Length: 422
Image (cartoon, rainbow, N blue to C red):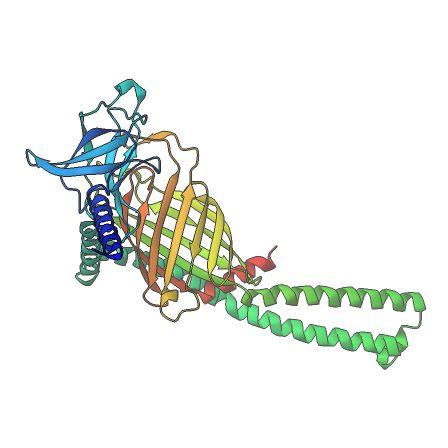
């Protein structure tokens, strides 16, 4: 056999040995580990060799997955030196909507004792992502059916809109009553200004009867000064009256329905946009309801809270701060696709309020800030729907949201009149 042939066979044999080694020892690690058995009802496609993370740091891998006594047992190989306590919480999570699944570990308390090798721990069973999406879509479908069939949601929404229309009609009647007087006042101001200009010209040029009669220079200056001050006053009055058309005022009504506890709440506010083009004010009530009603078991919404905010806005974002739902906080809405014809209908929002909350609400202790977030879709100029997670750090209830918003020209004029009265 030629030396070249021997060398080729030896190389081929070496490659085959290397391939078999990589195949059979692919999961080999020199790190020493100990096994922990975690019980789940469903692991939702968790793969073997998936990561095990504690506080975001990988501390092991999934060694095996098996079924014992109708329970799924995940054998987790934990790196030696990493101590887990018996009350540690294990759950199957994803890095994103279509990301990789892994075991998330939330460390327990030292008082519970260490979790030893071979011992069993109870995992937290959460619904798979596809079932969660199906539940959310079911809630949206129930919302649409309720509105279309005049169900509970539709009836409450109609009642609220009827109250808004009644309030708007009352204010409209007031503004309509005042409108003729404002119009006549503007005409009179124009006429008075023209006459004052004529008087000033007559005095200055010593023309006409008034100009010829006022020969005394001191008297002439006094009259000129008085007329000039009167003109300035008329100009300021005209400026105030002109501000009546420089406000944009919107009625904004939000309705939230939480399917899990079966509770509903409403917000009603006026949003006032001055002529600055970048600031606005919001004044209203949040969580409107009868405080004397008996609360349901899982109803933790505090009723009738004042909502007063100052905000800044532009084409793609709105930021506001103030008393939000009865407590200090901030809110933000973002339109990440504001320049896209269709995607501009979507708005992502977040509210963070009540940072120092530490009280009991309907028999439950609350000691974390109130954080809510969600996405809204504007169906039309006046109506939008959304999906929100409210009080996510505590109850984390899913809510279906409906919003009605419209511009009220008469209220805008009313605020203009209020500006004149300052």
